[in-house]
Amino acid sequence: MKSWPTPFVPAVPGHGDPLRLHDTRRDAVVPVDAGEVARLYVCGITPYDATHLGHAATYVTFDLVVRALRDAGHRVEYVQNVTDVDDPLLERAERDGRDWRELATSEIDLFREDMTALAVVPPDALVGVVESMPEIIREVRTLLGSGRAYRLPLPDGEGDGYDVYLDLGQAPTFGEVSGWTREQMSAVFADRGGDPDRAGKRDPFDPLLWRGARAGEPCWDDDELGAGRPGWHIECTAISREHLGHPFDLQGGGTDLVFPHHEMSAVQSAALTGDDTFARVYVHQAMVAFDGEKMSKSKGNLVLVSRLRADGVDPMAIRLVLLAQHYRTEWEYTDSLLVQAQSRLARWREALSTNGGVDATDTVAAVRAAVADDLSTLRALEAVDAWCERTLAGEGEDPGAPGLLARTLDAVLGIRL
Ligand code: 5CA
Ligand code: ZN
Image (cartoon, rainbow, N blue to C red; front, side, top):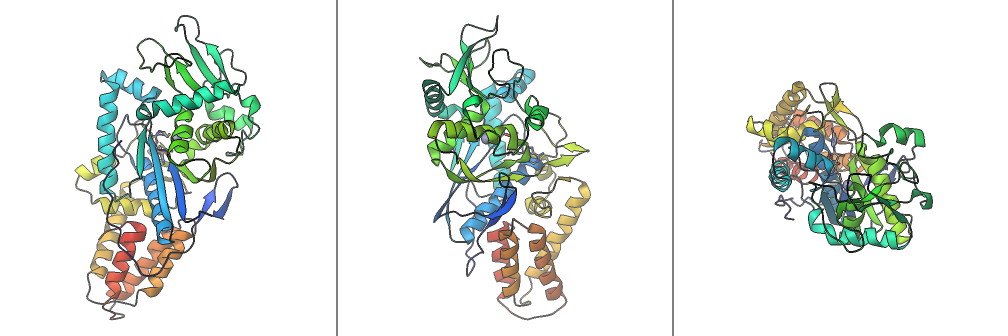
């Protein structure tokens, strides 16, 4: 499907430092050892409600990753999916008496507008599940054909077809992405779309690959699988394999995807390819909260990017709210964070519109080094604050400095003043 417009990213002299990020699998900050081309897959939205600040935090984090990789000299191939058919979308459409396709289309449009306003560099391919049905079906058929997956007849009264599950008993790497114990997995599996109590499963955690058709649900026909629709995790295995190939350099998303989603995407890939490596590095954005709880569409405690924009908030101030938090630290949105970001933005605008300022070479290097060091955005913002204070105090008369720093903020942090 169509992505969104690419923001202009100005050139900055020199190169950024090699990027280091926290890898969930190794639980360590590691170099992103990409070659000339860095290949990224970031889990995209399920489009049943508008973009909230939690989503925005996730996509701005991976936008910083894309910008840092480019600044360090890589070409980036970036793929993001859209879960445009899945239970939560169908349930919301049913609740609101809307057609699920129409709901998805309108929320994807709003997401594109929000991402554009936040100056997020778009993926090279934004790929929906519905448009990927042939690739997804091919993967499920392969898994079934190789005996790595099995069929279960639908429960009584639900239809005549079959559900298809992956057999985790044949997946020795299961658990390696999250590093979780089975107890930890049990605590969240059902809440995160799993069906541990489905009778007949070989292992309660076996992930659903294909859901046989139920009355009133959308379905796709296949000679071998029977009518049905994909389970959640197989979409990201299939779309990443089709558009990037396995293994690739980095898979990203929020920490709520560590288990089961990224764990399952990886074991499904291993079962398909025989190669245990799916993504070389797994990077996760901490959850953003509001009113004391994780901001989530299902709970409804949302601060929407589109609402803030409609209230006249400068999208660059929203972006600065996000950059003022480290991506691995959970935080809670409050209006005072927005007020602080607005005053910081005003201060930066004032300092960067002067005719001359303190030589910006060290500040540019400090911003680049901070971002390359596991996206240490707070340190980057402090370096800019310091330059602004000194420049506004009248130190330095370098006429090129404000322009150089402004281009750096635009290119590396995505802050356009
Ligand atoms: N479509 C799936 C991924 S394949 C999905 O999780 N969709 S989503 O709409 O629920 O979330 C989109 C992205 O935002 C995911 O990467 C998710 O981890 C992240 N996310 C959701 N809620 C929050 C939150 N409160 N804070 C930070 N990130 C969040
Ligand atoms: Zn995903």
